[in-house]
Amino acid sequence: MDKNEILAKLPGMFVEPGLRQEMAHNSKFLRIGKGDMIVREGQYLDFLPIVLTGEIRVFQQKEDREILLYYVRAGQTCMMSLSAAYFNNTSVRME
Image (tube, rainbow, N blue to C red; front, side, top):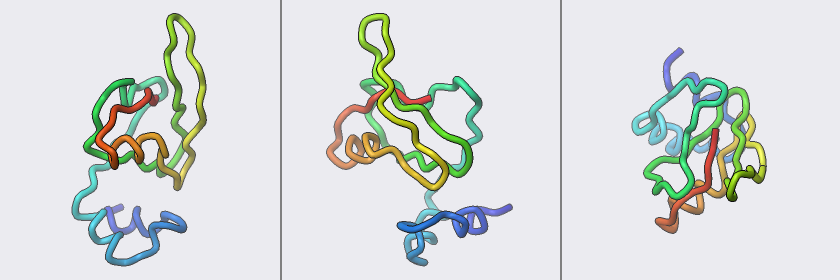
């Protein structure tokens, strides 16, 4: 399946044809396994993860405890990553 076919399956905010074309041209598709770290806390982002299938767990690490913030599911993106990328701030941890 090529990028355009994959992107055509995304819902809502991704329906604009120009946006899809831009995403197809600039995107990188990754297959992430369970427990794989996608973004480390404090990392600066130059990308925006969009989940196509499955879900991502977004959390913060405080001392020896994890604080679950939320899950990002298929067709969604991480709002904290969006904010971090837009404002050039660091992100929370995702896996």
